[in-house]
Image (tube, rainbow over all chains, first blue to last red):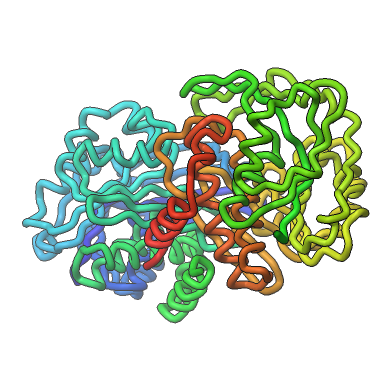
Length: 299
Length: 299
């Protein structure tokens, strides 16, 4: 009961070589919530339209996700369409309909404003800052971002970076934000912008975390049957923050274990569309894969 | 005294954002020899021209490399020129002069034909097979290859793969050889072609080994000042095979440690042109970086 996430809920229309889905439940904060619910009971703040399906809200609540902060606004839920090339690394956005998310003004319910562990899922940095303004002394705030904001809202993003403890981003975003092609240097440059910790995700190549007191790297869990990569980064963040929230404190040991939890949680996500695979997983599944991944990286 | 490598010695002209070198000592088997000399005393089989510098041969012999099998042929030493883009991932070959290597007919000296651990460095698969024909019951033969041979000598390469214990290749080559974009599947497909072990290198993203009895993955050692990536793959192979040769046997534990040794040995290589950095390193340097890399991947 100590984790909070602010971000999007969406309906996604996705096409990959493994198949396709229309209006499947998506959104960064939704993926994060389902992922982190394997470790703790997160509170979710976001906005949906009046078309948001009762069964989707029920699924989230069934996993212990506190949906008090999910506002229902007049209009349609945010919709996104994407298509992946067979190499999985190239994603084409086929459409984006912001709908009710266009004027999203996050309202963090009073009961969850004092939660210590907070994830600001991908949104305009100004919106992330608005959510941050409402919190009561959080102890560990991690933000996500994307190339769009680096491109069109860099000053806002830099302002936000001075206020958060960690930034989670992928290799392409890190290079774009810092102008450094070497990822170690890029991570160091991001730390120079404010965050104590940088979590750098490299998709199928794994992830690493850098901070003053920690440097830990990990290959991805070897998934040989990827179905849909959508949401993998958010599920990584959900596993990471869920693990930290469960541990109840931030130190090198909990951060390292959180990186492993993030990695294995994301590995379930990519095995299905939406949360079709991840949503059916239990802590036993996570723990088995945690041990398996450690066996792969242990000399 | 149990390791043998067959491959090229060359003079390279290289340009990177960090600087340039003209006619610097290079070649796959040269890099491999210097790298593996940190662990054992390898025997080197290859060919050079009459222009091969006495100081270069003396440097190799000074490191304990047995150069009895380095034939001096009438003509010039193999020369290669390359230029790296600032992103390091794009390499342009500016020229290739095969010179004496064009008609390379490997002659493995009788005294080293029975060495148990053998590396067939990158060369035409038919040439690699000719070297293999001369060996007396090697116990562990690992081959390297490149996209050129996958393209123009695929049948020869497939024939070779049925005769070796391991293949070491990079991600691009693995995808090209197997048609699988997923690297786990690609490695499995390579195993289906014959080798018991596949060592898949991913540059800055690390490497993994797959086999019936082992699956081990590792991120790269974090180098923040790359100078020249030329030879990194051969130095990985040299550290890997040197470590195996030092251990004297192939089993999951020695293979895992060999992956770590390969990784850290390659990390010194990229810090300088030619073997300018690696050549000055000692076992103490390797061991320190070995421990440091393990600390980065240990939970």
